[in-house]
Length: 394
Image 1 (spheres, rainbow, N blue to C red):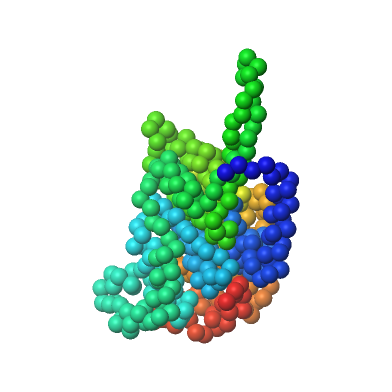
Image 2 (cartoon, rainbow, N blue to C red):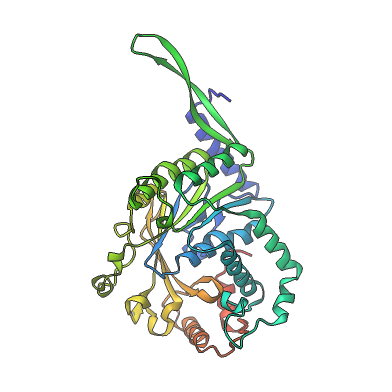
């Protein structure tokens, strides 16, 4: 299809439409699960490119799962009148089954406060068999409906090379929208005039459909013929992900490790946090993305205190989320998160000045490590209050 609508008219119309959508009760982003940090990270927007980075074993995959998959899925499930969600997931480091078990673990904790990691769900530890009651609970309607929605919303793809992923995404885009072209007048070297059609913009069939492209992690992409790991990532990011963001308004979410140098003895001594300069294998992703999110574990670099938080007591249950780069807003801000790896949950910690509330969380973290209830530990005590207090949305 061809259009003569001007760029200015289209931009102004879009601004007006987005304003009116909110006034009518709609949304222009999937809200951040971190309410106090929402000025820095407002949530997931269409047409934005996100990169999540940390050192190895920094909880990148779990953070991505919680922030860009599980919480958005729950929000989309509860707000079907406001948005639809489609996720292309490229699990280069794990299996679809592993991702699904992590979602089940998250749901059991989120809905009923039950603590069952993937290890416990699989009855992997000798003497710890998954109770029949858990299987019965998973048959309840609230779980079955959410698991069905999970299955319908996510496409686990087997494509592993940049061009294969690009072709899959562009084919989907063409099936779910219309490419609009404009006519350009040309003059060849002999002065002959002509016209060509050039891509102008894309009109989706469903403007409230959020299409996420999750790659975990980018260095594990199969290399195209003759390309180094760096060249492979550069092509994937600069040529392919930038295009699907700009052309189709899709949302790439890429996990990328920090370089090995950032984990050297000297780096640990200097307590270095993740940065754009220390992205592993390629810096181009930092150049291309809209937002670069860093995760930092103070315990991993042997810190006993961090911005007023007692790491000696929190240990690995603390992560610092930092907006390293934000091309569309505030950057450099950070927030302290309570990280519960067993059930893939992250919650904002209270400000360091709230000593009484933090003391409750310190004790909660210490109790988790003691494993006082090895099969079922119900989170119905003081920490439930903290979770509800800072919860972003119902």
